Image 1 (tube, one colour):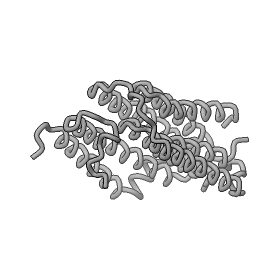
Image 2: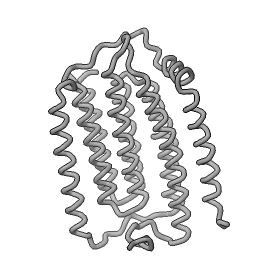
Image 3: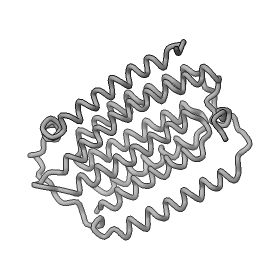
Length: 105
Length: 167
């Protein structure tokens, strides 16, 4: 029997993997991809709760709408983020975070 | 929601998610991310969220990952060269992640309600897209317009950012 806890643990592990990617990778695009993993982990737990919270024999569709909006915003975020990375690469010819330290205190 | 299917797709998702952050070659990472998203879509379908599963495949595995691959190939990024590892930061990161996973398991096993099985829903009478459309267009009209505006603003912003001369 698969329970809500199983889904929550799988989603949390996916979040931990994305978190590890953000902390340990040193390439901007790799960090960005790990960020997408974290976003999707949150979506998975939202859908899990939506299916768990059954009302009138139907899953809670408000959560699914929220996921739909999150996916939309994430797509816009990816477009803007990648445009910034391209602009940065034109200016500095690198996507390695340790070479991009002009804001470092 | 057969348990073998759930565990198979979870394992595929976590394995390829791990490969995203392990491989140094960005193209390999991006293709692993596609497989990870496909397995995630299968998990959505196992939770009776068919529309979200289709959206996941179309938007993420399709559009977003094509954008990633396109940028990786446009910038012609070689595999990340091996540099001297910042050891304190590396072990700090590992410790933070280990603590996060420990808290995750503690909270999940302390959450008694979550160990009940999923309640049944009326199958056959569940046109998923129909209910989602009703909810969006009856309860979330304004939010939908705001999201549309956001997309337009993002598109214009990307075009301006990508211009060669920023004024």
